[in-house]
Image 1 (cartoon, rainbow, N blue to C red):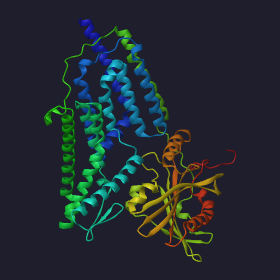
Image 2 (image 1 turned 180 degrees about the vertical axis):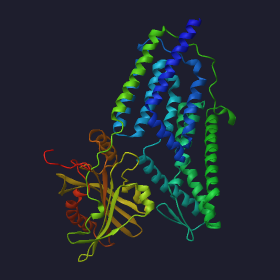
Image 3 (image 1 turned 60 degrees about the vertical axis):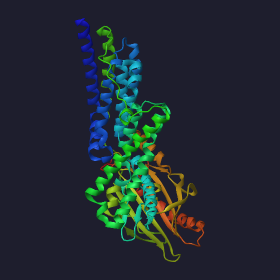
Image 4 (image 1 turned 45 degrees about the vertical axis):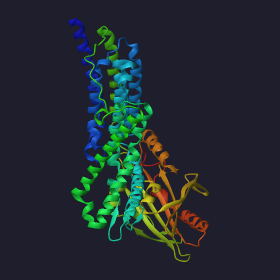
Length: 536
C-alpha cells in the first residue's frame, strides 16, 4: 500500500513539474497577459479567472483519476502538439494573443494526457472558462469599442429625450446645448461587458437548468451590458443638464459605473430566477447557483511507474522541443524598410496645390503611427479640393496597427450611405489594377466621397481582415509588418453628380500614385543601414 502511495505521489510530482515547465516555456506571453490585466480595466478581472478554474476542478477532484497506459494519453499529447505549433507560429509572427491561446490549448492537452478523455470531459467547462482571461487583439477591441460607443450614445440620447430634454447626437458626441458630452472608449461599455460575460458564463455553468436556458443566460450579457451602459449615459446626461459637468467627473462618475455593474449582476440573477420558475422549480435567490459539492479524495488508479512515466516524459519532451524552437526564433527584429519621410512629401502634384495639416496629440496617442501626412489639395481653376491622408506603421506587432476609416467615420457624426469595393482598371500599382474601398458619407446636408485602401508590403488590400491575415503571413515569411493606410476625401456639392466627384479623385490618383513608392515600401526593400558596397 505504501509503495502504491509513493508511486502515486511521484507521478503527481512529475505532472506538477510538467505544468511548471509549461509556465516557463510560455513565461513571456503570461507576463504580458498579466500586464494587460493590471493596465486595462476591461481585463482587471483576469486575475480571478485561473483561481476560479482551479477551485472548480478541485471540487470535482473525486471524479478525476490518473489514466493507465500510454495509449490513453495520445489524444492529450496530440493536443499539446497542436498547441505548440500554434505557439511557434505566434512566436514567429510575435503575436502574443496567438501565444496566449496556444497556452490554453497546451494546458488542455496536458490535462487530457494526465486524466484522459474522461477527465477532459469533466474539466472541459472549467478549462474553457480560462478563455475569458486572454485579452482580445487590439483591432477587435478597437472595432468593438467604436461600435458600442455609437450604440450606447444613441440609446442614451433616447433616454434623455424621454426625460423631455432637448439633445442632439453627432456621432458619439451628445450636445445638450450648454454642455457637450463625448462617449469615449472608457464609456463604451467594455469595462462591463468582459467581466459580466465571464460572470454570466460561470453562472450558466453552475445554473441547474436545460441547456437552452444556460445559453440564453450567457448570451444575455451583451444586450444587458449595452442597455445598462446606455442607461448610465442617459442618467449622466440628465444630471449634467440639471447640475453641470461635475456630475460626469471624478468620484461620482466612477461610483455610477460600479452601481450600474452591480445592477447588471442583479438583473442577471433575476433572469436566472425567472428561468427557474419557467422550469417549475421554485428556488430562492441563493439556490440559483449551485457550487459542485466535494466528493472526497480521488482514488488514483496508478499503473506501474514506468508506464505512466512515458506519458509525462512525452509531454515534457514536446514542451522541450517547443521551447527550443521558440528560443531559436525569439528576438527576431522586423526588417525595417528604407523610405522617405512624409515630411518631404510634395505639396504640388500636377495642377494640384496643397497645404499641410496636422493631427493633435490626442489622435497621435490613439493611432500610435510611425509617420503620417495630411495635405489639403486644391485645383484653383476647377475649384476642386481633395484631402489626402496616409498613416505609415514601421511595425504592427505590438498593438500599433492600421485603423480602418470604416470604423472611425461614424464616430465623427458621419453616416455611411453607400459602401463598395471598386477596381480602377486604368490605374496600376505594382503591376496590379488599383482596388479601393469607395464610400459616400453624409452628415446633415453635407456629403463626401471617400476612397481608401491598405498598402501592405506591396499589396493593395481593401478588406481589413485580409490585412490581418497577410500581417500574420508576412511576419513569418518576410519578417516584416510595416504597412500604411491611404485615404482620399473630396466634398460633394448638393447639386453635384457623384460621378463628377469620382472623376475628380480619379484624376488626383493619376498624379498621386507615381509619388507613393518612395514613401511606402513595396514587396522588395532595402533594410535601413544596408549599403550596397562594390563587390557585395
